[in-house]
Length: 188
Image 1 (cartoon, rainbow, N blue to C red):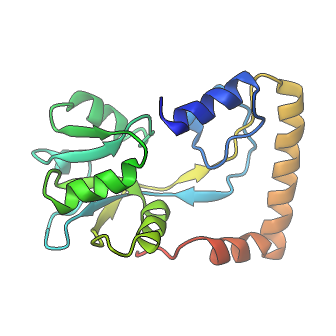
Image 2 (cartoon, rainbow, N blue to C red; image 1 turned 90 degrees about the vertical axis):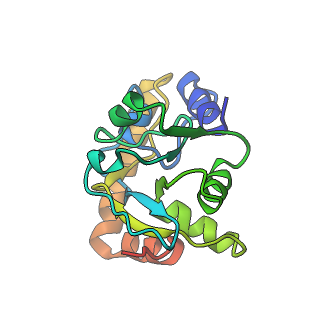
């Protein structure tokens, strides 16, 4: 079980109250606040010399694709990956992102898919890794902090507080300043 799966399990069973940085499809049975905290975008990354660019799931045909186990890649991509398991390499383990980047560097996959903020932060932390080329993205989705379904009343109350806080932070500019301060700058 990956640490992400373990985290979801802990929140689902009530061992923890909240899951940080998740999509609705990661845990659809959880209690969600209405307003997303940010927008996440799954980006396609290739070797720097590649000329390929993402133009819908069909553009992935014939490529070796690297993804991380137990991650949701969205309504457009998850069915494609499930259908084309012969070309999809699923990575898990202690540091699956570093493993995927190394697979890309060594030509074992043609493209990897990862949230741009996550990969760019990883590259900042590991300057020894070759920087992959941005090759397109799917439309962004909201990032939430879903709450445990094990205690629905408490979770609904906390979701209301999160929405109230996000609305206040949006209206006075604090949310934008926080994102600028703590989020890696996107390539595109």
